[in-house]
Structures are given as C-alpha cells and as structure tokens.
Length: 349
Image 1: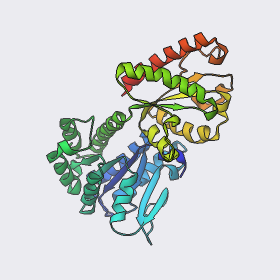
Image 2: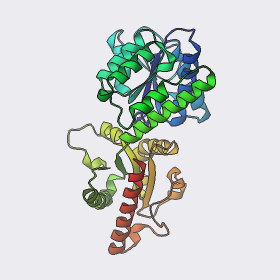
Image 3: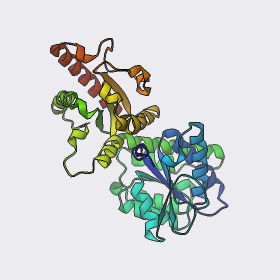
C-alpha cells in the first residue's frame, strides 16, 4: 500500500456473510461499495461471502472507472490459512478470533453495518469500545437493526459529533422495499458520513519543502496571529512534530483531519519526491471529491503550470512570484492570503 492510501478516511463495512442475501442487504451492499469509491474513501471488509464480497466487488468496479489502484484503497482482513472470497486489494492475515474484528476496526475511521447474524453485532460492540462512529442501517434487519436500537438508546455516549439523533434515526431507519429505496438510503447515509468526516476536518495543512522552512514559519506566524484573535488552533505543518514522534503517521493524521491545504510552491517544492509522490496525490484526491479545499502560493519561479495542482485557484495574483516583491509587499500579500484562507476555511468546517 502506498502512503497516500492511508491518508484518506477508511470505512469498514460488515454484515450478513451468507451467499444468498436478502434483497435489502444485497441492494445496499452493492450501492455502499459504489458510493464509498465515488467519495474517495478507502474500504475495509472481512473477506467473507455476502456483504463483504458484494461491497468489495462494487467498490472495485467503480475504482476501475477512475483507473485507481485497488490495493491502495481496499483492505481485506482475513483469518490465517483462508483466502478472501473477493480476490483483490491489500490482504491482511490475522489469527482467527478477536483479531478478525479488532484489526479492521483499528484501520477504520467509521463503520457501516448491513444485516448480519451475530458476527456483525460483535463488530458493532468492538467498534463502540474503540470509539468508532457506527452507521447501522436498521432497515436491513438482523444485527444492524439491533445495533441501531442500542445506538439510539445510548445516543449521548456515541462518537457521532455533528449528527443530530433525529437525522440519524430518519436516514438509517428508512424503508427499503426496492433497489431505488436502497440507493436513496445509502446516499442519505453517505451524506451523514460526509458530515461526520467534515466535522473532523478542523485543521489547515501546510505542504512545503524543508528547504523553504522560512516561508512556512512566516505563514504560520501570520495565520497564528489570526488564530489567536479568532480563538482557533487549526494551522498544522510538520514543524509541529516533536522529536521522537512518528513523523509519517503524524503527517497522515494531520491530512485526514484537515479541511484546507496550502501549498507553498517553489522549485524545492516541485523537486521534493515525498511531496509530489505522497502528499500531493492524497491532497488532490481529497480535493477532487470535495473533502479538502486547496489553495497554493506562488513563492518562487518554477514550472507550476506542468503540475496537477495548477487546476486549483491560486491564493493570489501569480503574474509575479512573491519572492520578487519587496519585503513590505510580501507581508501585505501574505496577510491578505491568511485572511482569505481563514475565512474560506471557517465556511467549510
């Protein structure tokens, strides 16, 4: 798996494991796999027949349309000495038992339940213990309905910030009597998941080359001044990583919790292998599906027009790079950029 695959949000889908699925479970399994791919999220399944297979297959078909490597966005957690029913994706083998549930949940940022006959409720219980948000489609019956009832009865203890109980009830209890009903319920459920993830994206992520650290510090100082006056603490760059911390994991977590990304564009930026092969694919993918807002600052002359991020609006007039301006003009432009970034970010979160 590439680094950028771990930067997206991941959704664990669990449900009925039999080959013959009830119609409502089959319709929603197929549609949830398709919707997760369209939204740019990663999918986690258990590798069994039924919901796991149908969801993974629909997810795979949708990714083929965008020429996206499946192994970057599909994880299957499978007991040792077994093979996943759907062949593809990144397979993680674990010892049979509790690891089958916990390993997938450890990767997951949210959990979706469809039907189920015992094991799905176990997934819910472990997810609740690990404080993962659970979206249980009650209309698919079985364990999903039982989990839904338990979630509602303990609503104040759920990790579902940004979602109202009434809305959760209305969407996930929706009747499914046809394939169109299944599509409607899944689309509404994905809107809830989008709202939850959006609520988690509170940060502003700065992407820059370490050779341009002085520019990063300058922008952070300006944005920090705006933070203090507005009561926010959102700006993040890898200068915030303390000695001894796992830097790659910190960058991944920061990107997953960011609603805006600022690119400090220079020749150093464009020549950074990590930025261009790891950070940028993740940022652009998230931006293309509306998960993150991108703006870039043209600091030094370079071939920015040959990059994929050039399709996004720059944060200022790029007729001249900022380093060709006087120090006073540089500060003026950076302050204006900072105000616009903060205002746009506040509207997004």
